[in-house]
Length: 465
Image (cartoon, rainbow, N blue to C red; front, top):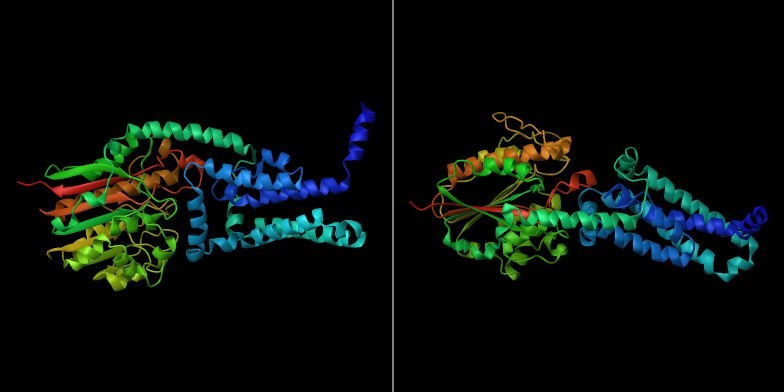
């Protein structure tokens, strides 16, 4: 037995071990962001031990790991992931976090293939050793930058949610079973009676049109939590006709997708145009959008958002809407900045509670678009008005503080919408309230509590006497 083992070990020369080690690092470091950012893959995939056996298997393994990891996601589609990298690069410098890692990964792959398949290096021992040294240095820097960039370092310091070693294939099978279960629960939801289509509402029949697009409106799988969230929204509104519906969202476009759908009544297609610095008005005209029709019919168009105008290039709204307010404009109106998101932020309830001080609601033929902020995941605080109290988070799905904040902040917004309806919605007005996306948590322990297929929609109209 010992002789056979010695014979086998002799067959495994040092060059094979170096190649195997390089392949193994390339696969796992290349997929590092999926592990630490979206939690869709373990730091080390069990399959990578097999894929590292040869260069050809490594290529197959990289594609396999990427595809399976994305399919295994509870929430993220490939198009959303790529869009997020791009969008975050515009607004948060996110790509810079991984830029060096991918640069050195690409360099390492190129070096590896030259090293592996170039006959010249195999014949020239000196060049072979130099090239091998460069390859090892490249691997070193790839690992160094993976562990020292700000966002990566933030996650690396707390890897409690990231699996260290797991099978990517096994994760896919588990998540497919989970998604099936969630869809079955969703079918029984009170929101899935009718799919919302803004084109079925002839907006020009209404005097004042209000659209509130709410950030990350949560549809919990637990129906008791949903009932607690919705109760303040519809309480004591017997004089109003309220419809509850659902709508799909846009994983590849996030908030912008829902925003432009509401402007145009069509599914938006081109992210570049949606983010363009100067094509906002021409986009609305060329697409024959609903709000452009309203503008031509004499409606005054108004827009308000509780965050900065620079984000997603929304400053383009200034030139199109008749009245436009962003965070910086609200400061000049003596609103206080007390509900920060990742950066600064205005309280959504401040806007809803003081809508009539921002706009003259006695005017006829007006369109109002309000884009909220405080529903974002990982809020810094409970954004609750002083006259309201924090709701208890005794249910299991709300034990985590971030989930409890999402729960309470949504209840606060719903209370403000309820007050807004009672105070401002008149006969021949319509209010449309809908979520832009599900809560976009990265951690699985959060994502599993939400329905990730749809967002809720509510319409409010005053009943005829």
